[in-house]
Length: 131
Ligand code: 2F8
Ligand code: CA
Image 1 (tube, protein in one colour):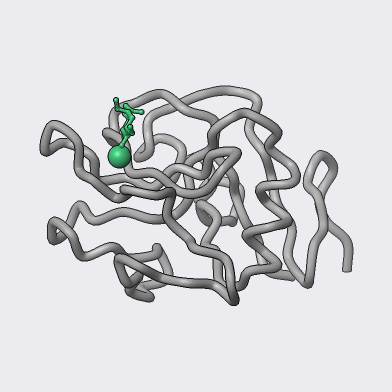
Image 2 (cartoon, rainbow, N blue to C red; image 1 turned 90 degrees about the horizontal axis):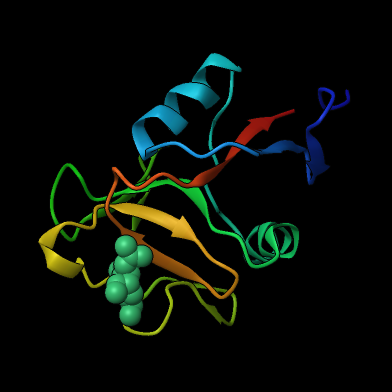
């Protein structure tokens, strides 16, 4: 199997890095309309791969604590510990998630690591489709 045109292949999955920006909910819907999901990170290799593709830009992931503040969950239902460590690489940026202004419920991949920011922020996003 191969990935659709404009998608990149890595470890049995295909990834789409949006050129547009949208809020988290619209980004999620855009992925769903492509039979995909906002990207869910489940290994250190996957984290490193996605980081290697985004340069200094920022992208939404399928990660939020909208349901219960402080209880971070991936869109596949897996919970995330505040100090989740993937292999030896810390997952969140130092000091994150901090729920700044009590209004940061969506997870963003940055060139360093992860940050929580307001879900209505317009950002690029990453879709993931399993092969
Ligand atoms: O210092 C980290 C802090 O930086 C910004 O707030 C000033 C981020 N906000 C946005 O990107 C909207 C915070 O999420 C981040 O924690
Ligand atoms: Ca934050």
